[in-house]
Length: 166
Image (cartoon, rainbow, N blue to C red; front, side):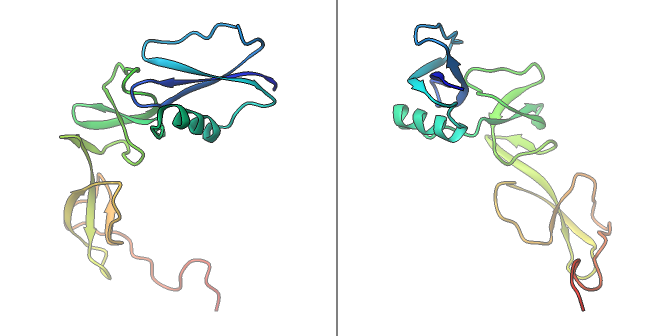
């Protein structure tokens, strides 16, 4: 689609809001409070999300975040959406940027924490429950779970790995 490209982004943190193609360069672009527009001129095709983010970066010198936000209600992640916390709101809670947090994770003091069962290697028995940052790398014996408890058993795969041939 050819037209005059406009990239709409959040002023506070450079979040990509939308990519608009106009028939004429004079066509109005409606902006919400906290948004700004980059007019790109005539384009032969719609810019990709990556290209749009590169244009925002060239204008603001701020790398646009992914736009993935968690909806946090009473300190627990209750959902994820694409949004800009500086502009958008959600009726069920507070919006917080996160590329890793998921439903059920805890959020307190600016940090996300996920519940993990610590599983004893070889037996599959849960020996402890810990909370850790979901964005960090974890040992293979940490299993994210909201239902496993100490003393529970995680099924252990026995035999050759799936897909192995003899």
